[in-house]
Length: 465
Ligand SMILES: Cc1ncc(COP(=O)(O)O)c(C=O)c1O
Image (tube, rainbow, N blue to C red):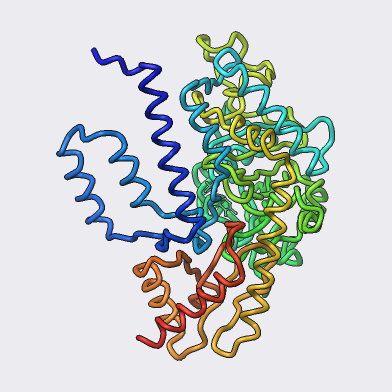
């Protein structure tokens, strides 16, 4: 049998891999890597890897280099695509540490560092959010799962579905601009389409709070038991923050669970300048925040924070004689009692590593820089005759488009051509039925000059159509 645990071989491979990654970062720093996304058609990529496997054992470094070369380069200043961080290299190194230790246990004994650190980080976030001492939480694998986790806790407060099943018509209320995972969570919970009450948004893509009463009364009259209302902080398409204060007051008045999807924009809890976007957060029963979006961590790391920590135990209680003696005891140190995952990654170590290496000011600086940059970009767009802005940005997400005839078709073509050229990576979205180009400014190395160059590229593409 091969000795796969040879410590000296590991040391040598580790040095080689870190050197390759450092060279990669250097090539971005010095501008020699000019292509952000080396886009190839999916079938071609599949064929490449199929043939590569057929070649058998060809060495680790070839594979590492090929993987780097063929990936979307999130650390590149011209990456402005989806809302995934360009992770702090320190957090990536923590990924190596945690990958090797592999102590990602649902039970304390298998997560001696991870379980307490999750609690420390949850209480730390809770304090930033202005929740009191009773608050507690944990980390889970992504915003999608986190929203489902929080909504299951919400449902458990109002119904005994977990133990008894139900035929009751349960429902949630949410903005029509909320991320699709909230809709998915509700369907997984058996609410069906009719149990997802979508509230229209105003011209700033924020939930119209003035419609809440009417929609709520209508649902109740139809026999629905509305148990939760969800605020977006912020929405995905436009980065719009719902009016959390008014939603929270409505939830309190009607005894509903108030959950905030702060996957992207909850990060402003770290920013003195932008914190006010979360006004009303103190009224929430639960909030989720992705560390892997605006907080520099590698995917996936999502915080689920409950104002009343004990609410988190209302669901997931199950007998597991091989893990714990008592299914109902509220032991914070056995994280599997509150999460979907049994075995899970040692996520907390990656976040904690960043704080230890850099201090937590990095989060505030990062958020402030990117939110400011989006405003500068929006002002630039507004000053131009050949572009138009889709919305006034509150976050680091900006939707815009070229002013042209056949606008939807031409802007969609522009985005496709940008992808094929690979010098920039941006995405598109639909606002009020129209196609817009969309940037999420995720990278603190992106400068105004990169955005000017993006606009120049778009003009060039348009002129060649
Ligand atoms: C507002 C919002 N909620 C939830 C999610 C889903 O998070 P994840 O990709 O971590 O599952 C996203 C992803 O973009 C989002 O923007």
